[in-house]
Amino acid sequence: MAAAGGKHWVMLAAGSKKWDNYRHQADVCHAYQIMHQNGIPDSQIVVMMYDDIAYNDKNPYPGKIINKPNGWNVYQKVPKDYTGQDVTPENFLAVLRGDERAVRKNGPKKVIASGGNDTIFIYLSDHGGPGVFCFPNSPLYASDLIATIKQMAADRMFSKMVIYLEACYSGSMFTQLPSYIHVYAVTAANPIESSYACFFDPVRKTYLSNEFSAVWMHHNEKCDLNKATFQDQFGYLQKKKCHSHFCWFGDMSVGQCPISEVLKNTPQKPPQIIKARKLRLTDLTPTHEVPFTILKHRIATETDAGKRQSLIRKQESLYQARAKIERTVQAIKHRFPAGADEDEVDGDYSTSIDLQEFKTVAEHFRTTCFDWHVEEFEIALFHMHVFARLCARGVEAERIKEAITTVGESSNV
Image (cartoon, rainbow, N blue to C red; front, side, top):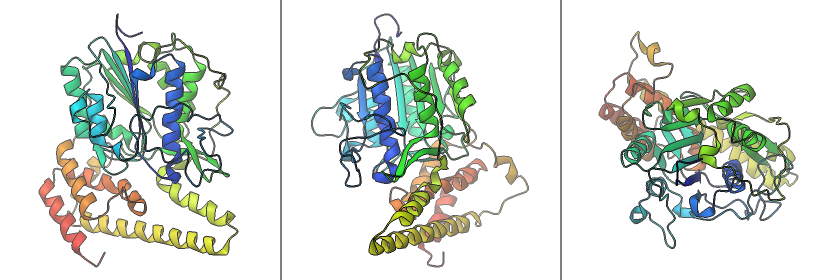
């Protein structure tokens, strides 16, 4: 349990919107049900999600969201603390540090009002890139997340913090997390790889979950939280994983604590939650291939000729956008000829870059060339590793920005 007299706080955030990203909000809704089942009161749980899935026109079961095949409705009774345009990285960080005045929102402003004896669990699910986690319209950068966590530790806002992050390249968000501030983080992928979607639903025509999230939630529902530690759960993750490499960062002493110390364990036992069955992951798909896979299925199953042709045009547009992004990034990269030592940063380069410098470069690329929050440019996130490697090689941010501007203004890419 939390330290004597301490509370258990939970922050859950889905950073995406639109039907094709169904799985991220489904993940967060499922996580809420687990926290609620564990006995954590809603007053200590903050939920951020765009909330455009349950009653989406494409939802064949209005008001219902599931997170696994034939699953139960995880949307029921989920708090709507921050929805729509209120789901921003600025609000996320303000809520996390308990800064109600900094929250930009009409109506109630629920925040993590934690103290030195309290624990905090954070779970985020969305797209990501090197040093980047996406929110619907703007990104959260590793530099800002790490700075906030450090300040919270200095201000004695928690006794222990655990962070689970579902996103591609999610390991890159924590390679510079200190090991001495009682924070333990687990990620869906290492700093240089994609994460994976799972459970494609042929009726809903989208993916229901993600590999990492499906596994850790399954373990939470099947294990004894008073006995199993977070490190035990990480071992389970490693045993069950199929593709991406789950990673842990930070303070191992927190990882060795029983899960109930952070997630509580006084079950409510609502009738909808049943004993977790054996987990079998299906339809594992790299995140950057998800839009193409979904479109391919929709084209194959669409019976209306006009609608089918419209989907084919959308598919062609996505392929064209992907090709243009690749040409643009390569043109920028070629302005910085590699030396013989380039291979030295081909592995995990994330520990050697200045996070603030990288943020400056990435934001310039996003605002000058391709805003990855626009659906057709989403794949631009997966090319951020090029700029991260340039930063790791010691190339000055201003030089990279100049190259981005020059190439971005060219009509020849």
